[in-house]
Length: 274
Image (cartoon, rainbow, N blue to C red; front, side, top):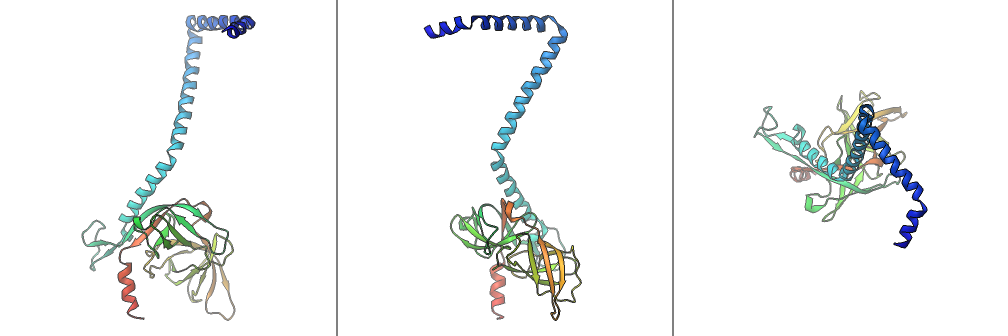
């Protein structure tokens, strides 16, 4: 208490000046219409700015929750799109018609670990067998192909992306439906190669490459990349093709795992022909 009194006495001139200033501003703004209006406008702007900062901070804290909700909603919408269904007769019907049978179900997942600078890159997802995930399921984003589920545990799954030298997938040109295999050369994480596409195939730089849908893993027509270079190998019957990949593996956040409900039936039938 003694220290407080000494502090006030030491700075009594300052406190007196501050008090007089407060009174001066009070009389100025209360008796003058113009100054009162200016003060009210300025104070409202300050308060509005503080509210805006608070709201932005609250929205930032909710980003994780909002992203998860958006991913789940996107998965529901993807499951309902026409490409997720198959016809059970030869008639064209609406997706919501009872003649359409669901074939592909989408499960949202978050990438919690990944690599993009190795020869055998991988992803780890925060979903596992309890969520219906299993090996040999497709992994995509809203833009296109990511990779294929390799292993699963109860709550996690690992994925082989296109940028893994062990990855290969049957693909085709969206425009002419000429097919080949997409493989990664182990160089740039944005570029892959298309092998085994015959030279008679009519292709051009800029053509879109999509999944063929023959592996019982991916639905047909999912974008993979865009042809960026077409080379000629003397004596070969195939094009030398580079594609720029749709997926940017250095910025992956949320993905979707595709469960092909009819995968087992197709694979068992094809096994009988081997």
